Length: 537
Ligand SMILES: *[C@@H]1O[C@H](CO)[C@@H](O)[C@H](O)[C@H]1NC(C)=O
Ligand SMILES: *[C@@H]1O[C@H](CO)[C@@H](O)[C@H](O)[C@H]1NC(C)=O
Ligand SMILES: *[C@@H]1O[C@H](CO)[C@@H](O)[C@H](O)[C@H]1NC(C)=O
Ligand SMILES: *[C@@H]1O[C@H](CO)[C@@H](O)[C@H](O)[C@H]1NC(C)=O
Image 1 (cartoon, rainbow, N blue to C red):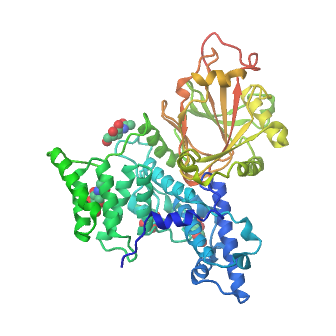
Image 2: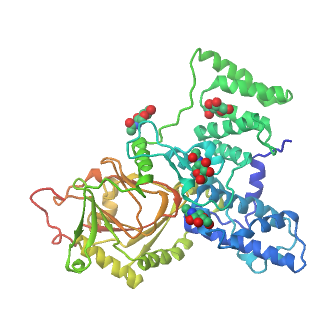
Image 3: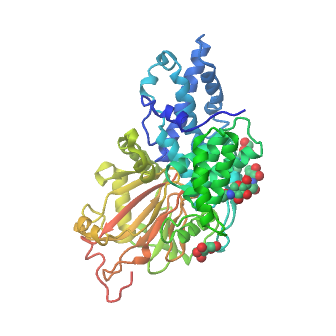
């Protein structure tokens, strides 16, 4: 049996704007709220049916299927969206299955009550964002594509990775509470999304995989073969694999000789294939940016370091001010100089971290609504949500600012330090290599309080895998350790910037990563950190 599944069936759901808000995938905390949306909708439907109401069979199936969500003994609800495959499947259910089923109801308010008017189901941008995020994770962590389809996250080190890298079967670490398998329609959809973003590398991988599954007769509900063949052929053509494209267009033409598209393309591909002589084509991942290999290698090494002991230079108790005499900082020295990188363990309490996270959520929500036609910009740039906490916002914020002052010896008063920047990463959210100090064109814009001297990066959560902060120039991967802080210096005492403080945030593989940054500026700290005769930190 063959069911035509194409972009059009997806676009149909996207036009259902009454419910679409967009941008859930940009922060894991928003995704967590969606688990409860599905739970509440399912409860409403079951309740309506119990009272004798009639609903379409599909809606009934969805409600029954989600029944396990309200059973806390079966599932930790948040962990469901902490897994990228689980997150994709949830968004798909809501954006496609639930949205379509609700559309068939003549009076949805009867079933859902007041809740209906407040429903904000994820948009097509969320679904695409999830698919693209999964593909990014696939690259960074070298995930086995077949395993992803089977619902498993299995990271493989690459041939020339450092010794610190070890293959990790992340699925083994977690009790799987539901089958996370992807269907062939998902595999095909990933190929379509990649293709529509001109990402022909991933399009080739996922469309070829779709075809492989079909050829092995491993699907009951298959996509239209001609559609798959033509999309893969078009993709190969873009990648200059003209022989591959020719073969696929020919196969599509054999299936349907009345199809003018394949017929017209065959002549073209033949022409280019002939020009290529004996050239042997190979699928190659494009180099997205300079240094990406080192960055990804450190990210992979970091997955294990989240749990295993690290090769740190030393550990000691540190009493930078009287505040820490009774309870010294447990300091791990990760790098001694150029740049100095320290990890301060247990520098904040569980409840302080919780307060910082909790205060951020309403601030995030104000910035979350994005026009539905926000398109690519939304998907590619919004992979985290940010909120700023000022000392006057809450006693906990003021207390933590003071603690940063005592720990660094630098003033954190307004004007000499920035407010706390709290970030919750979204699916596949990464922060490519950058320095925290300003240079070039950014200087004039940002520098009225002086440049950034030191970064105090608080980890407000654990993650299960991934998410390390990596320093590619000095081969350091700082693990995400709840309630600790990575502290690194961007400027020498001499006032010179430290280019080796270049760092990046790896995407989270499993979990929800929360951080709070405090950047301390030069101005106001001239006497706290005077210039030295030597440029030491
Ligand atoms: C690892 O090997 C690949 C080819 O196998 C090469 O392109 C890449 O530069 C190497 N990466 C590093 C960090 O040496
Ligand atoms: C990974 O772990 C899961 C869960 O324990 C297991 O079912 C699967 O076979 C493992 N996969 C590999 C490749 O080791
Ligand atoms: C998995 O679940 C079983 C039973 O519910 C429990 O005993 C076990 O500790 C769990 N394992 C992990 C890794 O959470
Ligand atoms: C396409 O899939 C086949 C298996 O059906 C595999 O042998 C081949 O290497 C794949 N090609 C690409 C470019 O992924």
